[in-house]
Image (tube, rainbow, N blue to C red; front, side):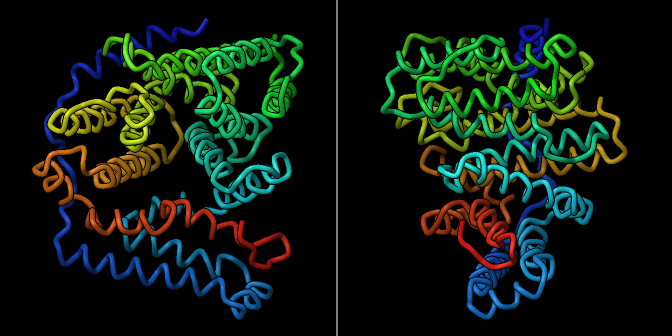
Length: 411
């Protein structure tokens, strides 16, 4: 059996020991630098828009994405957000590009009713699993289990997050899905369940239940975490410790399952490290969704904190995350240090951006202090957010606007 609670106790202790003092960052961006980057940002958006023109369509018929879109994407990452060459070698590698495109087309075929936002939701998990493949020296590819687990998110999360579905229906859904995960024959009662059960079959084809029992234990663990998280929808009745336990369990078991579905077998050190990584990602999600969770009366560790305490929570999250990611060094791939640096830089960039987007929840002093470490002004970030979907999602759309025959299409 997986020692999930032991790992949770370990990281709860780490959380309690993590400082809530403002963390040290590598670089402060001057006002001039911010304005220059914002100007570059606007130019990049113009270039992306130009790729939609009729002449660009004709060019793409004769050319390749790496000669059109990817130089613009590289400039976005390098000139705006300071990703290093070693980071870009990973992000823009043929392996990562190919698996992303592969997942997109498979997802389109499996779930043509899914929106681009839904597919992007799944792709974010693909990238996590691809990163784990890289750190484990496993070929970076879309295996049946990588595809299936990443597709579960758009279906199960959207069902559980749907305010129009009653808590009773969600509980009954979770019971049926849990039975199917345990190998029982369960008849789906709706389209969502039908799709989810097909995805479970993909796990079973890749991993024999008798030979890889831990794979299925990890799936039971994340299902338990997801089911327990329904308690967060209550407006009261949960202590801070109970909320933390649920949030840590949901996030930690999610990435633990990523690891098992990638490798089939893991050591106890690897299990623990993946739990910590998953908890860090869950804390990031909670910071990103502060306003949405508060508006929906969803309890998280930060959804109801006052301004001063919220800033301290972000500080503690960053300090905790740096400690948690140190444990990921148990993976011995040649470039694991580079990848861990890329992971932490990406997460901290998103945390700082999320503070800016949720500015009303933080004190003025805290906003002024943390904005120094953002390559863009918070006002600029909020303006761009109000004008369109997240810039990462916009990039995702451009990434896949090339159809199989080379023509532009808007997904």
